[in-house]
Amino acid sequence: ALRESQQILATVSESSPVHLAMFDLDRRCVFVNRPLAGSSLDQVIGKRLDDMMPPELVASSVRNFLEVVETGCDADVTDRIQFPGMEPRYYRMLLRPVSRDGRVIGVVANVADVTESRRLHEQQQLQANIIERMHEGVMLLDRDARILFTNPALESMFGYAPGELTGVYAGVLSFRSATGIEVTESGRLFIRN
View 1: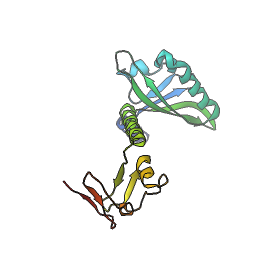
View 2 (view 1 turned 60 degrees about the vertical axis):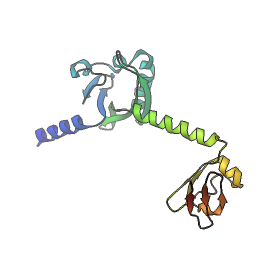
View 3 (view 1 turned 30 degrees about the vertical axis):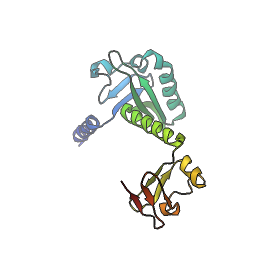
View 4 (view 1 turned 90 degrees about the vertical axis):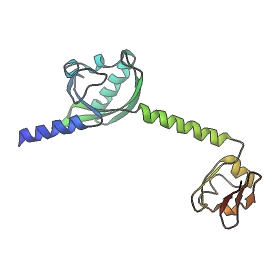
């Protein structure tokens, strides 16, 4: 049963979408499911955390590690890391204490590459900032002409407070624009050529 349990654990950790590593109190790696940056297991197991991180991140990595050991609380950190010969990437590291018999014996790290999701988030933030600062009124409607979003310019044009139009039918605005878009009293949206 123990051997089967170990095989299951190995399969689960190898299949995990995140990198998993465990460090002892001397900050030496005692387990890793998949090393970062193309390293082999032999290059990582037994190596100290201090020697695995780029020089500019050693101090903060050690500080985060020690905080987890001393407090027994998780730490959630995102850092920009550039390994030799590679483009910089953003990694989210969730550090958790590992306890046995009521005392912390090490730290486990769940490490995920969040570069792409971070880039998408930054792009969405930029788009949101542009819409917020536009002088033209913008609104987003659902299929029933219910207002899902308005920008400050549109709210100002019609004399509404921020967010006041959200959820109401666009027909409350009752306007016909020179662009051929018409919203009627019934809330129907028409686009005319």
